[in-house]
Image (cartoon, rainbow, N blue to C red):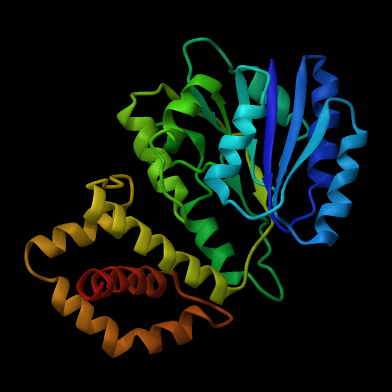
Length: 296
Protein backbone atom coordinates (compact mmCIF):
# COMPACT_ATOMS: atom_id res chain seq x y z
CA UNK A 1 0.00 0.00 0.00
CA UNK A 2 2.39 2.74 1.21
CA UNK A 3 6.15 3.22 1.32
CA UNK A 4 7.33 6.08 3.56
CA UNK A 5 10.70 7.32 2.32
CA UNK A 6 12.98 9.65 4.28
CA UNK A 7 16.36 10.90 3.02
CA UNK A 8 18.61 11.77 5.96
CA UNK A 9 21.78 13.81 6.28
CA UNK A 10 23.18 14.81 9.68
CA UNK A 11 19.80 14.81 11.40
CA UNK A 12 18.15 12.67 14.08
CA UNK A 13 15.01 11.03 12.67
CA UNK A 14 14.00 8.69 15.50
CA UNK A 15 11.20 10.96 16.75
CA UNK A 16 9.77 11.48 13.26
CA UNK A 17 9.94 7.79 12.34
CA UNK A 18 8.37 6.72 15.65
CA UNK A 19 5.42 9.06 15.13
CA UNK A 20 4.87 7.99 11.52
CA UNK A 21 5.16 4.31 12.52
CA UNK A 22 2.58 4.76 15.28
CA UNK A 23 0.12 6.40 12.90
CA UNK A 24 0.64 3.75 10.22
CA UNK A 25 -0.01 0.94 12.69
CA UNK A 26 -3.30 2.59 13.68
CA UNK A 27 -4.47 2.50 10.07
CA UNK A 28 -3.82 -1.25 9.77
CA UNK A 29 -2.50 -1.07 6.22
CA UNK A 30 0.48 -2.70 4.52
CA UNK A 31 3.38 -0.31 4.88
CA UNK A 32 7.12 0.13 5.11
CA UNK A 33 9.36 2.94 6.31
CA UNK A 34 12.75 3.32 4.66
CA UNK A 35 15.25 5.97 5.68
CA UNK A 36 18.37 6.56 3.62
CA UNK A 37 21.39 7.96 5.44
CA UNK A 38 23.38 9.97 2.94
CA UNK A 39 26.85 9.79 4.49
CA UNK A 40 26.02 11.42 7.83
CA UNK A 41 28.43 11.86 10.71
CA UNK A 42 28.72 8.78 12.92
CA UNK A 43 26.83 10.31 15.86
CA UNK A 44 23.70 10.65 13.71
CA UNK A 45 24.09 7.23 12.11
CA UNK A 46 24.31 5.42 15.45
CA UNK A 47 21.16 6.98 16.87
CA UNK A 48 19.20 6.61 13.64
CA UNK A 49 20.06 2.90 13.45
CA UNK A 50 17.60 2.30 16.30
CA UNK A 51 14.64 2.84 13.94
CA UNK A 52 15.33 -0.63 12.51
CA UNK A 53 13.88 -2.08 15.72
CA UNK A 54 10.43 -0.97 14.58
CA UNK A 55 8.36 -3.33 12.44
CA UNK A 56 8.56 -2.85 8.65
CA UNK A 57 11.24 -0.21 9.12
CA UNK A 58 14.83 -0.08 7.95
CA UNK A 59 17.75 2.28 7.52
CA UNK A 60 19.89 2.20 4.39
CA UNK A 61 23.37 3.72 4.51
CA UNK A 62 25.55 5.38 1.91
CA UNK A 63 29.33 5.47 2.52
CA UNK A 64 29.46 8.90 0.90
CA UNK A 65 27.16 11.86 0.36
CA UNK A 66 25.37 11.49 -2.97
CA UNK A 67 22.86 14.34 -2.67
CA UNK A 68 19.12 14.72 -2.30
CA UNK A 69 18.07 13.71 -5.81
CA UNK A 70 20.16 10.53 -5.86
CA UNK A 71 19.00 9.69 -2.32
CA UNK A 72 15.36 9.91 -3.36
CA UNK A 73 16.01 7.81 -6.44
CA UNK A 74 17.66 5.15 -4.28
CA UNK A 75 14.71 5.16 -1.90
CA UNK A 76 12.19 4.85 -4.72
CA UNK A 77 14.07 1.90 -6.16
CA UNK A 78 14.07 0.21 -2.75
CA UNK A 79 10.32 0.78 -2.20
CA UNK A 80 7.97 -2.19 -2.51
CA UNK A 81 4.65 -0.34 -2.83
CA UNK A 82 3.07 1.76 -5.56
CA UNK A 83 2.40 4.84 -3.41
CA UNK A 84 5.38 6.73 -2.01
CA UNK A 85 5.24 9.21 0.87
CA UNK A 86 8.35 11.39 0.85
CA UNK A 87 9.25 13.30 4.00
CA UNK A 88 12.31 15.38 4.72
CA UNK A 89 14.20 14.39 7.85
CA UNK A 90 13.72 17.77 9.57
CA UNK A 91 9.92 17.80 9.64
CA UNK A 92 7.22 16.57 12.01
CA UNK A 93 3.49 16.02 11.37
CA UNK A 94 1.23 18.79 12.57
CA UNK A 95 -1.64 16.34 13.14
CA UNK A 96 -2.00 12.97 14.86
CA UNK A 97 -4.15 12.04 11.83
CA UNK A 98 -1.44 12.91 9.32
CA UNK A 99 -1.33 9.46 7.69
CA UNK A 100 -5.11 9.05 7.80
CA UNK A 101 -5.57 12.39 6.03
CA UNK A 102 -3.41 11.25 3.13
CA UNK A 103 -5.09 7.84 2.91
CA UNK A 104 -8.50 9.52 2.71
CA UNK A 105 -7.63 11.30 -0.54
CA UNK A 106 -5.57 8.67 -2.36
CA UNK A 107 -7.35 7.51 -5.50
CA UNK A 108 -6.50 6.15 -8.94
CA UNK A 109 -7.13 9.48 -10.69
CA UNK A 110 -4.66 11.46 -8.57
CA UNK A 111 -0.95 11.29 -9.33
CA UNK A 112 0.49 13.35 -6.46
CA UNK A 113 -0.81 14.91 -3.25
CA UNK A 114 1.05 17.70 -1.44
CA UNK A 115 0.32 18.28 2.23
CA UNK A 116 2.00 21.63 2.76
CA UNK A 117 4.41 23.24 5.18
CA UNK A 118 3.95 24.87 8.58
CA UNK A 119 6.06 26.87 10.99
CA UNK A 120 5.65 27.42 14.71
CA UNK A 121 4.17 30.82 15.47
CA UNK A 122 7.00 31.91 17.75
CA UNK A 123 10.24 32.83 15.96
CA UNK A 124 13.37 30.83 16.80
CA UNK A 125 15.43 32.40 19.58
CA UNK A 126 19.02 31.85 18.55
CA UNK A 127 19.12 31.17 14.81
CA UNK A 128 17.02 30.58 11.73
CA UNK A 129 14.99 33.80 11.78
CA UNK A 130 15.51 34.41 8.05
CA UNK A 131 14.38 30.90 7.13
CA UNK A 132 11.45 31.14 9.53
CA UNK A 133 10.24 34.51 8.22
CA UNK A 134 10.61 33.41 4.60
CA UNK A 135 8.75 30.16 5.28
CA UNK A 136 5.91 31.88 7.11
CA UNK A 137 5.41 34.35 4.26
CA UNK A 138 6.01 32.26 1.14
CA UNK A 139 5.60 28.58 2.09
CA UNK A 140 2.87 28.39 4.73
CA UNK A 141 0.05 28.58 2.21
CA UNK A 142 -3.39 26.95 2.63
CA UNK A 143 -4.45 24.23 0.19
CA UNK A 144 -7.34 26.36 -1.11
CA UNK A 145 -4.82 28.84 -2.49
CA UNK A 146 -2.31 26.21 -3.65
CA UNK A 147 -5.00 24.37 -5.63
CA UNK A 148 -5.72 27.49 -7.71
CA UNK A 149 -2.39 26.88 -9.49
CA UNK A 150 -1.43 23.37 -8.33
CA UNK A 151 1.83 23.07 -10.28
CA UNK A 152 3.31 26.35 -9.03
CA UNK A 153 3.56 26.06 -5.24
CA UNK A 154 5.30 22.73 -4.75
CA UNK A 155 7.09 21.81 -1.53
CA UNK A 156 8.59 18.37 -1.86
CA UNK A 157 9.35 17.93 1.84
CA UNK A 158 5.90 16.38 2.36
CA UNK A 159 4.02 14.65 -0.44
CA UNK A 160 2.58 11.38 -1.68
CA UNK A 161 3.09 10.30 -5.28
CA UNK A 162 2.56 7.26 -7.47
CA UNK A 163 5.84 5.43 -7.88
CA UNK A 164 5.54 5.41 -11.67
CA UNK A 165 5.02 9.19 -11.73
CA UNK A 166 7.94 9.84 -9.41
CA UNK A 167 10.24 7.84 -11.68
CA UNK A 168 9.10 9.85 -14.70
CA UNK A 169 9.91 13.11 -12.92
CA UNK A 170 13.29 12.02 -11.59
CA UNK A 171 14.37 10.65 -14.96
CA UNK A 172 14.42 14.31 -16.08
CA UNK A 173 16.34 15.63 -13.08
CA UNK A 174 19.92 15.02 -14.12
CA UNK A 175 21.42 17.73 -11.92
CA UNK A 176 22.34 18.36 -8.31
CA UNK A 177 22.31 21.23 -5.85
CA UNK A 178 19.83 23.37 -3.95
CA UNK A 179 16.55 24.45 -5.56
CA UNK A 180 15.05 21.03 -6.29
CA UNK A 181 11.44 22.13 -5.79
CA UNK A 182 11.58 24.62 -8.67
CA UNK A 183 12.32 21.84 -11.14
CA UNK A 184 10.09 19.28 -9.45
CA UNK A 185 7.17 21.66 -9.92
CA UNK A 186 8.14 22.29 -13.55
CA UNK A 187 8.15 18.61 -14.43
CA UNK A 188 4.85 17.85 -12.70
CA UNK A 189 3.39 20.46 -15.05
CA UNK A 190 5.22 19.29 -18.19
CA UNK A 191 4.16 15.69 -17.59
CA UNK A 192 0.57 16.87 -16.96
CA UNK A 193 0.34 15.06 -13.65
CA UNK A 194 -2.90 15.38 -11.71
CA UNK A 195 -1.68 17.25 -8.62
CA UNK A 196 -3.86 17.89 -5.57
CA UNK A 197 -3.06 19.93 -2.47
CA UNK A 198 -4.54 19.32 0.98
CA UNK A 199 -4.08 20.90 4.40
CA UNK A 200 -1.96 18.15 5.95
CA UNK A 201 1.11 20.07 6.96
CA UNK A 202 4.36 19.13 8.58
CA UNK A 203 6.27 21.54 10.78
CA UNK A 204 9.62 22.55 9.34
CA UNK A 205 12.04 22.21 12.25
CA UNK A 206 15.55 22.25 10.77
CA UNK A 207 16.01 25.99 10.43
CA UNK A 208 19.53 26.86 9.38
CA UNK A 209 21.36 30.06 10.29
CA UNK A 210 20.67 33.23 8.34
CA UNK A 211 24.05 33.00 6.61
CA UNK A 212 23.54 29.36 5.66
CA UNK A 213 20.11 30.06 4.19
CA UNK A 214 21.39 33.10 2.30
CA UNK A 215 24.14 30.98 0.77
CA UNK A 216 21.64 28.24 -0.14
CA UNK A 217 19.42 30.84 -1.80
CA UNK A 218 22.37 32.05 -3.87
CA UNK A 219 23.16 28.45 -4.82
CA UNK A 220 19.54 28.00 -5.92
CA UNK A 221 19.81 31.11 -8.11
CA UNK A 222 23.00 29.82 -9.72
CA UNK A 223 21.33 26.47 -10.44
CA UNK A 224 18.25 28.12 -11.91
CA UNK A 225 20.34 30.32 -14.21
CA UNK A 226 22.59 27.45 -15.26
CA UNK A 227 19.66 25.24 -16.24
CA UNK A 228 18.05 28.17 -18.07
CA UNK A 229 21.20 29.02 -20.06
CA UNK A 230 22.68 25.55 -20.60
CA UNK A 231 19.59 23.42 -21.09
CA UNK A 232 16.77 25.86 -21.76
CA UNK A 233 14.94 24.62 -18.65
CA UNK A 234 13.00 27.55 -17.21
CA UNK A 235 11.35 27.08 -13.82
CA UNK A 236 8.16 28.92 -14.74
CA UNK A 237 6.83 28.64 -11.20
CA UNK A 238 9.66 30.84 -9.85
CA UNK A 239 8.32 34.41 -9.84
CA UNK A 240 11.68 35.99 -9.11
CA UNK A 241 13.39 34.30 -12.06
CA UNK A 242 10.57 35.23 -14.40
CA UNK A 243 10.63 38.81 -13.18
CA UNK A 244 14.34 38.95 -14.01
CA UNK A 245 13.80 37.43 -17.46
CA UNK A 246 11.20 40.13 -18.20
CA UNK A 247 13.56 42.87 -17.00
CA UNK A 248 16.44 41.44 -19.01
CA UNK A 249 14.38 41.62 -22.20
CA UNK A 250 14.24 45.40 -21.84
CA UNK A 251 17.94 45.70 -21.02
CA UNK A 252 17.80 46.16 -17.25
CA UNK A 253 20.04 43.22 -16.34
CA UNK A 254 23.22 45.36 -16.40
CA UNK A 255 21.82 48.19 -14.22
CA UNK A 256 20.54 45.58 -11.76
CA UNK A 257 23.93 43.87 -11.68
CA UNK A 258 25.58 47.22 -10.98
CA UNK A 259 23.07 47.87 -8.20
CA UNK A 260 24.06 44.55 -6.62
CA UNK A 261 27.72 45.61 -6.55
CA UNK A 262 26.83 48.94 -4.96
CA UNK A 263 24.34 47.91 -2.25
CA UNK A 264 24.65 44.18 -1.60
CA UNK A 265 26.60 44.67 1.63
CA UNK A 266 24.00 46.96 3.14
CA UNK A 267 21.25 44.51 2.17
CA UNK A 268 23.24 41.65 3.68
CA UNK A 269 23.55 43.61 6.92
CA UNK A 270 19.76 43.56 7.21
CA UNK A 271 19.28 40.00 5.94
CA UNK A 272 21.82 38.53 8.35
CA UNK A 273 20.53 40.52 11.32
CA UNK A 274 18.04 39.67 14.06
CA UNK A 275 15.02 41.01 12.17
CA UNK A 276 15.55 40.46 8.43
CA UNK A 277 13.18 42.25 6.10
CA UNK A 278 11.59 40.09 3.39
CA UNK A 279 11.47 42.92 0.86
CA UNK A 280 15.21 43.41 1.36
CA UNK A 281 15.75 39.66 0.96
CA UNK A 282 13.71 39.40 -2.24
CA UNK A 283 15.38 42.52 -3.65
CA UNK A 284 18.79 41.06 -2.86
CA UNK A 285 17.94 37.84 -4.71
CA UNK A 286 16.69 39.71 -7.77
CA UNK A 287 19.86 41.79 -7.90
CA UNK A 288 21.99 38.70 -7.37
CA UNK A 289 20.27 36.96 -10.29
CA UNK A 290 21.26 39.89 -12.51
CA UNK A 291 24.82 39.97 -11.17
CA UNK A 292 25.25 36.23 -11.67
CA UNK A 293 23.78 36.41 -15.16
CA UNK A 294 26.22 39.15 -16.19
CA UNK A 295 29.38 37.83 -14.55
CA UNK A 296 29.16 34.03 -14.97
